[in-house]
View (tube, rainbow, N blue to C red):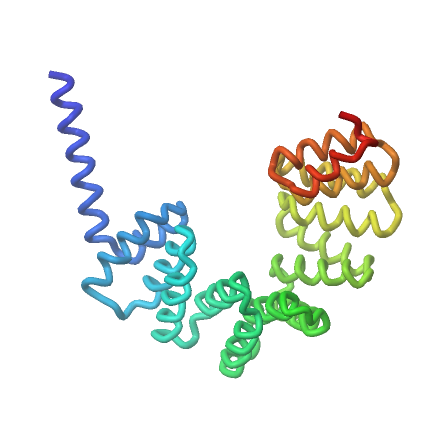
Length: 271
């Protein structure tokens, strides 16, 4: 009897799930996006758009789903459809630009973002996205100018501060980079990448002890954060501690770092 009840319960659950997908509201779709249940998001969006193809939020969510399912072409199409329905939809513009950048089309992303910013000139997210596109295109001056503008427009925008700090580290403007990274950590202290970048800044300042602490802090937040593991390995190697260097190169190699695998072949690390 218990088995029969169990199977009935399962059947009811499945039917309920199907009903939820077919009758999903925009709120349901957004909640599924928050859970990153991309297959369900796609099914919900498809079902929703059989009845209504006029909602830009649904197209944006569909783009997120396709991106999560590794289909960048359909993600791009969905984001662009969202923008066509709402010409002021900044989040869709940023996502569309990111797909272009990741596909090697940074110049096209720059062109589109500039056109969009003619109508939305003072938006921190658009300036940050344009800065990323310029950085990818190799124009660090324009990248920095847009990151600075983004931070000026929204001092609490962590992504823009972090991106600005990365350019500043590259240009060896280390004190300003550290200030921006510290401000980013004030907003959210659990950012492995920010601690890693700060470690780099201190390494370039020739303060190895502080750099080591920061790389270790980054790894304590995310034990699989490869950039910090590789940087810590190189840090130990550079400072002559080959035992610790080998340990972290081995950790990086287990996470798939080709550079770490090559480094471990060096005779100074033994067999």
